[in-house]
Every structure is written in C-alpha cells, then in structure tokens.
Image (tube, rainbow, N blue to C red; front, side):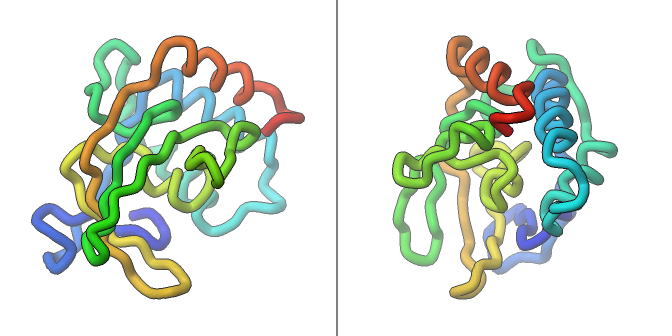
Length: 160
C-alpha cells in the first residue's frame, strides 16, 4: 500500500484494502528511467514505496490497459469527498510539472498515489491538514502527442 494513501472499495469510511499497481509496459519503462535518473540518495518515502510497487506491479501492454486507469499523461478528475470540490490534474513527468496549471508530477506524492487507480476508486490522502477522502470521477487516457512528449522528457536525465 502506498505511503499516505489507501484504497477504499465502498467509501472512505470502509475497511482499507491493498491496491496492486496496474501499469502499462511503456509507463513502467518511463518511470524506471525517471527514478534511475534521480538516484537513490534523495528518495523520499513515497518514492521508495513506488520502486517497490513497480517490482510487484501488474504490467499490461499499452494496447490492453483499460482507458480509465490513471497513467503518465492521463487527465484525472478527482473529487474531495469532504469539501465536494472537483479538481482536474494532468499526470506528467517531473520536468513538465506546474502546480499552477494542475500539471502534477508522476513522482509527486499525489501523482504517485493516483497512478494505477481507476475511475470510481476512492482513496484516503494523508496530508498536513489531515486525512482527505478522494474519489476519482473520470480518467482521460494520454493523447498520443502528449504521451510522446512525456516519453522524451522522461528519458532525459537532466530534465528529470
């Protein structure tokens, strides 16, 4: 289970279940490149957990991954179940992250946590202000042009 997050099957007040990461083969390769470029010396807890999850992930071909699975390049609509506020995020490589534009790095805590979840999933997010219940309302798959840009940025160790 990822640091700070837990999967819920029927709302955030239900018992926690472990979530096995589902990932497309190309995303696995890009994430490994990003993590390798960062090295292991500056790993934060969630990145160590991500490395471990990648080792045990359910890897599927790019053609076979469901379109509602959050992946690198996905646009994700997430509702905070407590405030009912809806947020739109684009999951991007670290070099493309821009919080003001809601472009969230795939290795930021929120990006890492959303990775591999599907539309309809709920998870808890532990943050400094307390625990928030988030629901993934919708996922738009990566667009081909966006996916290519993300791949180029992911393999550039200077950019990552």
